Length: 182
Picture 1 (cartoon, rainbow, N blue to C red):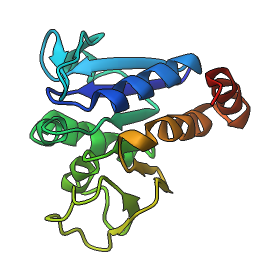
Picture 2 (cartoon, one colour):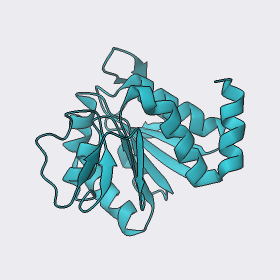
Picture 3 (cartoon, one colour):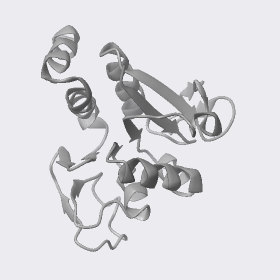
């Protein structure tokens, strides 16, 4: 079974986090939701989620993918956590998938993972970030090697379906989407 880590920081974007977690689990992907701190994590709009564990408990596990939900100040809180940067670099060095949506691609940039990459993010989220060779597009979803980025809450469902296809194939992705009745 494929394993995915979704770290949650205070101020995460609820629509993105819940959509990603829900759809990946519908595809029978083992999703570990890890809070940066112990206990309940509150999203940017006040929704409270109890993660499966705290990040320290997940650091030694092996994952095929890490997915960073955006939102503010959630993305900033992820970006200020050295454990997240170390984990992203470790995953990328192993050729594993690193994914981020909305404002969270700024975390990938800070970890040095967007150099010479095409990517996308919430408009303006990376306006003060200078990364060599980074090409920020207005596309809904961008896949560049093992880096997947997406625009924001409105693209969360398509982003999650893209992640499912990468991990489990087109048939599983199509089955999940059919069940959603879009």
